[in-house]
Length: 529
Image 1 (cartoon, helix red, strand yellow):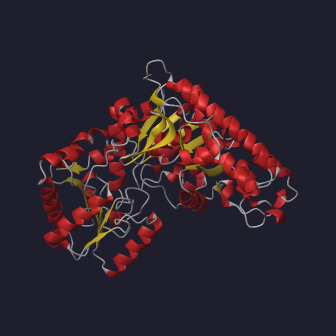
Image 2 (cartoon, rainbow, N blue to C red):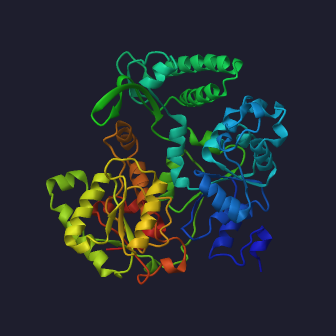
């Protein structure tokens, strides 16, 4: 019988379907797409594969790198240079991203043998199993060189489109233009698929980006000659942003969102000068970033429709595996509460929808164990306050707690979570209304999880509106992925997370019917009206 130890795993036994998924990864090559439910043990796929192949796994956050791969599976974890303190005596108190040597010549430093960054980098390059973050992988040269790895695992793959668009795109403010003496912004409003009469937005954008890159390159030389490490770092960051965008638009000039000039940036109703150049889709750029020279495994609990997922990323040929959920559908039900659409136009036409929703949510909460705590997800801060007031009028005033920051004051997410934990200690059956805990939060103490608003991207933003026009299917796919993330906050793979006696998960927005065809298969089969 095959054991986890044969794959260098420390588990005493495999989770359901885990061994089959590991063998599937090892027996296939090219581009692999894996939809693996929470609790299926997908982190082990990369670790087990490294017992036979060299593996690099990418994460979006340092916490996932350190905890999921470093601590649990002994991967060599490498962060960006800004996470390691420089040991050069003339550079005391700064991090390695302000090294007085450029990255390509850091090994020439007389203290290189003790440099924590170079040591971590060397270990990661030599290891059969290394964990990097996406940004490091895309900006460093060595991880993308041929032979750097045989398998590249992309964790939280539902975020890949946004990662690519953020990396390839570029936004420059008037403040930055003035500070770095960049050229005046040209007047551009258009993109690769639409051109104004007598103008070519793509060529005009390329011309400005090229001039900006040239200007910053000269400034970098000046900063290096004076060994101004802080200035070098700042110029390098902005220059890198402009260079990446220029390279991307040269590689493929199709399907861009371009705005430049006196009203390019919008903050509410306020217009400001700026330059915006972003791809409308990741399909032209993702393959060049992630698919060359190795087997690529894109995995997430919320892939959604694999056809739409692969189309957006420009993946033409792939093998797909949907890992069966170890918990039967009747143990992980997702209730659709009898609530009308909570979209803006629907509620404007019928304001009583807000009361219908509050009635349904209050009934659902009161039908649960009175000792349970929980989360209610909204998409805007104002929604949290208004829904809290409605639920308070329905007898839940002592349990409802609105996430701090609703008054407009910025509160970091980690601080929000800390205060929420304090609240639960004082009032164990509290219900938190939050706009920021859709993903990345393990609700190990909560039993109630309600989505009060289907999280459609905000099309009041011109860029998001253009993305909707470009691909309505992927607009719905993105919504479904975020919805599934929210619905999974209290079901984290533990036996005590499943069964109606252990928790309640629901959607309180009739708009959900628009996206059900795009949600993950295991979520769709658990939906009940």
